Structures are given as structure tokens and as C-alpha cells.
Length: 148
Image (cartoon, rainbow, N blue to C red):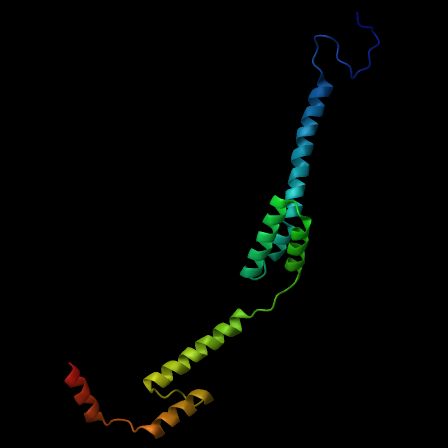
């Protein structure tokens, strides 16, 4: 009872509806493609901060995860802005200062004179020599033998 002049997009009874199959495949591909684009755009701040310091990268990653799960876009914008800013490196100079202070403390506690090209260490060693004279060689040997 169907007319003979049906349009091509209407399936006749008992035939496969190719347009519906094509639209189903297109819908699945579109959902996966848009989801991939969304996740790629969402991870943009993390990829930008990947070359920066570890702490900055971790903060940006946490802000991105919070934005992903809460759908509050302000966190994503904050992560993007933080990824764009180069934070100054405070840890390297502080580590260097801490290492130098340890060397100075070790030199003062052991009484070992450091090289004279290091002004702070040379003055500390000369002040120790003035305060207490160094033991002579035989006296130092007696102390070692007495403890052994």
C-alpha cells in the first residue's frame, strides 16, 4: 500500500534504513569528537605549565581537576592564568644559601681552616686560631691513644 514515488530517505517496509544507520554512526563520531576536543581544550593549562616548575604544574593540574569535576569555570581560568605566568625561582637560591650555611657551620665546629678565597670562612678560621692555640702534634697523639 505504499506509493511508488517515495523519497530516497524513506525506507520501504522490510528494507534497511541506511539513513538511520548513517546518522547513528555520525552521532557517535560527533559525540566522541566533541568530547575529545573538550578534554583537549580542558587540559590546555596543564600542557602549558608542563615546562614550568613542578609546584606550579601541580597547582595548575589540581585547579584543572577541580574545574572538571565541579564545572566551575573560574578554576579553569585561574589555572590558565597561572600557567601563563612565569613564577620566579626561589628554591635554587635558598638551597644554595642553605648549603653555604652548612659549610660554614661545619668549618666552625671542626675548626678546619678553609681556603682564603672564601672571605667569610677565612675570617671565621682566623678568629678561632686567635681564641685557642692549636694543640701540638704529640699532645694530639696522646688524646687519641687515651681514648682508644
